[in-house]
Image 1 (tube, rainbow, N blue to C red):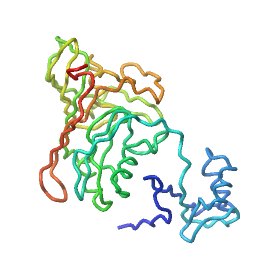
Image 2 (cartoon, rainbow, N blue to C red; image 1 turned 180 degrees about the horizontal axis):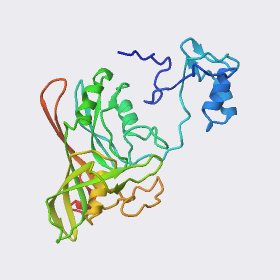
Image 3 (tube, rainbow, N blue to C red; image 1 turned 30 degrees about the horizontal axis):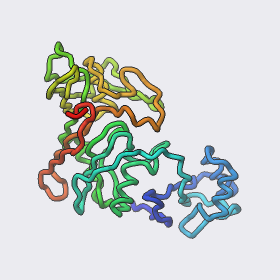
Image 4 (tube, rainbow, N blue to C red; image 1 turned 135 degrees about the vertical axis):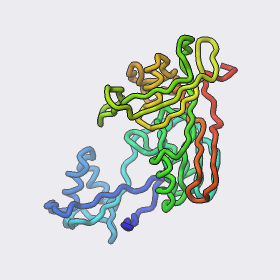
Length: 305
C-alpha cells in the first residue's frame, strides 16, 4: 500500500491544505518561481505575501521567497477562499455511527469543495458541525439535488463504501415532481447513451449503445403535476434529469433541461424538484443490511403549497 506523506498544516475551517509536488524534471531556480508558473490565477504579489506569511510549507517548515527549487518535494498551503453566498438551508443528520454519517443535503449545497463552492459545501459543514476532520463522501449528489449522501468517518474505510457505489450494490430511489402526462405509459424503463464532455456544463443523449438506465414510476398526480419514483440502475451525469426530459416531463425547477438557464448563485427561489429519497445496501464493514430514508419533502408536492 502506498503511504501518503501527512500534511504539516492542520485543517482550516474544515478544509484540508492543498498539496503540490515539485516536478522531478523541473528547472525553476526557486520554489517561488515554480509557484508563480503553477498558480497562474494567483497574482505573483499575492504569492509573495503568502511566502512572507509562511503560508507555503514543506516537511521541513515554511518556504522563503529565495528557497532553491528541490525536485520531488511537496508544498502544502491553504488557498484563499472565494467570496461565497451562504446557502440558507440546514443540513440534516439522518444517521450517525462510528463508521458512517448519512446526511440530508439541501438543495443548492454542493457535496464537496469545487470551483466557487468551498466553505458552503456539505462536507465542510459536516466536518465542522460534527467535529469529524477526516469525514469524506462515499459518493456525490449534484448541487441542485436534495437528499441522502453517505459520508465515511474513518479514512481507512472510505474505499470499502465507495466500492459499493462503483459496483452498483447500493439501491437508490429518487422522487421528482414534474408535469403529469395522462398519455405517458408508466411504469417504464428508459435506456439511452449519455455523454458529458469536459468543460461543457450539460450532458447529452446521443445515438449508440445505452450506458444509462432508469425505471420511472408514477406515485400520484394532482393539478397537472405528477410525483414520480425514479430508480436508476446506472449513475451517469444528469441521468435522471435527461431521462425525465426525454419522456416529455422535465423536472420542475431544472435550470439545465430542456433549456439551459443562466441563474445567479444567490437565487434560491426555484429548487430542482429532485430528491434522493432512499439508500439501501449491505454494510461492507458490519455485514448488516442498511436502509436510510430522507426526511425532506419536495416543496412542489407539499400539501400546504
